[in-house]
Length: 459
Image 1 (cartoon, rainbow, N blue to C red):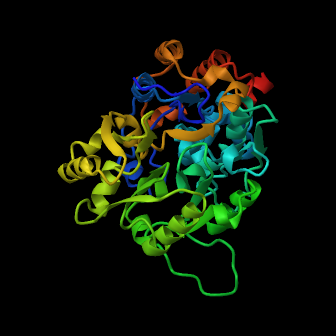
Image 2 (image 1 turned 180 degrees about the vertical axis):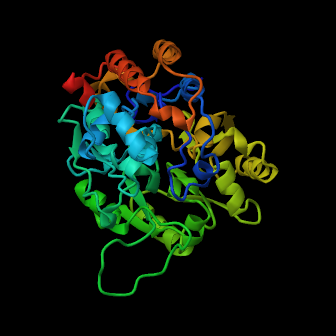
């Protein structure tokens, strides 16, 4: 096990607990894995336990780990807004009869991919010395756009001390300000406690400025807008010298790179990326070098060429949807999905990367998160990164910090409440309403979060 000084500024990875309605409805446009597994039978229990196993392994290796709770699904309160009436069971039945697509959307467990939950600026970069949070509006898809209020409530309950934490409103839920959270944001720095540079990656411009826009992606719609990234930076008080706004490659988007974290991952001074990640690779690297240099840091780019790993293989294995973590000695380990080891080209490239003395990546470890992978999310999708000082860690709700005792409690909780089989048609089962609400009500007590869910207040 590695050890960090107790007063050190550290990054905590908050993994999303997979929800009881984890299913393969194939709702995510542009997500090839999600679409290709549409209609298959899922195993929510196995999915949740796979996520817990990854958390446990990283905790055992000495990395700080937290958990974020699932969203209540099916989202019955959304059916009220859509004109369905009666008891919860009656509303669910009426919605299924009217259009099963509505029920599939309000039953999505996609909030498990907490990289989309919010964008975060740590206190070393903020003018007021506090940690800033903006919950993502996720307006590009209905099944995710309904997450923001509960996400904000959960983050507010975990990071409640106003002397340390600031929570901003989600951006207006319009196409012009489409915000997908930290999946399109990377903070690069020399060390976690040092000033950083924020790389915001966008796929399109959202506002009409009266001039022709690049045609961009043709197969899939780009989700993140430049305007959303700029607005989040303003909310957090970031200055131009602290930010780089980079356009995502349209080629990558059309190949299934719906978020930047499917094609690039950064940590500390390292940016591990595929050569097709950005529309203008040279300009992005030059800006990062300049702005990081001004803050006393040196960019370490680790470029993966198409000749080594094709764009198709990068998307199929989620090589870049990995966690890049700093160990106590300053070296790094990259946490990849097990699919990477089964692809000869990707496995060979990982071997080359960890053997190269020009970068601090010294090891890779592969983990089985197949239930998540089949629905379009790898290790990086499952976690939200939060850099905190010792004082900020002391000010947060400790009930969500992962340890052996919490692992055992959560494992037993999953075994009690989760099904081991869920077909898409099972989403019409009204028993899921009580099953999920009972489970989440117990979970909020276990994590000491209070009543963060609408059904708890209504009850």
